[in-house]
Image 1 (cartoon, rainbow, N blue to C red):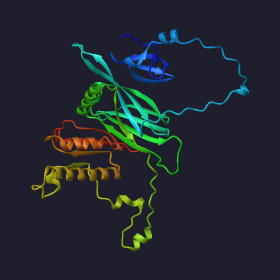
Image 2 (cartoon, helix red, strand yellow):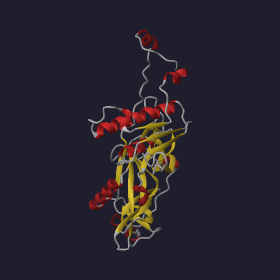
Image 3 (cartoon, rainbow, N blue to C red):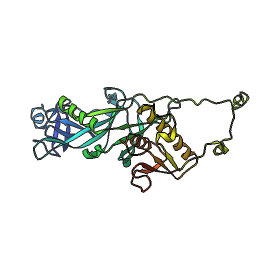
Image 4 (spheres, rainbow, N blue to C red):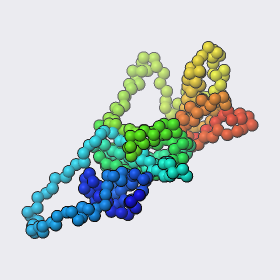
Length: 338
């Protein structure tokens, strides 16, 4: 490796000068040019000495008075695509066999839209928040988020984002939420693809076009009442709800008598519908906790419920641990109300 951190370099394509910040692999380094950090292949850069010796000596310019200077027009960055993407740039290292292995990923937010956004970012690893960031990203620009260790991405990572226009627009939605969940198999496939194509990294689309504001439809309560619908006082809504349960058994024979002819997909759908029902009732009644009995089996129902719980804002924590009553066949959910 002929480059070291701190070396001054020149980008061959644009003839811009920069500095080496980090050695990412034998063929790639992280550089900074005009305050912007990005990865580059070593054959795309060179030391600036050749340029310094071959440049012609500049002729001294005549003095120009301030009232003679013409204003330069700002040159906007070229638009190379559309949307806001989460970009993963792998940093390689060598193992004992001198093979390339991924040590970590550098995460960038890439904005190819012509709007600037404020954003909240949260990385969930194993159902627990591992990193949070609140900042903004300008139009047609990149934003470095942080580094993530390769081994952390094997523990069901979920990248959660909330975007809002930096300059509010009454016609646009107040915010937009999205998330990305990566699986280990999917990650390995992406790494193989970029190595075959000799690309620096891979990206996932988070936001295409920022959504318009959805106008709330006003309901004429008098008209509904005259049509025969029962209208409840919101202040007394709990009186009209089904009673909540502190323990819910989702075994299919507890939910329906006619289950023997059902397919596995139909059984799972009924179980998840029942879970959602009693979850919502627990929230409506402000229960401190809820125990869901899902059984052991192949773990499909348990995994589906855990994936749903990771997205629920009222969930403070949940645990699937051994108990004398349920073994490993139940998950305890604890709520937090704001």
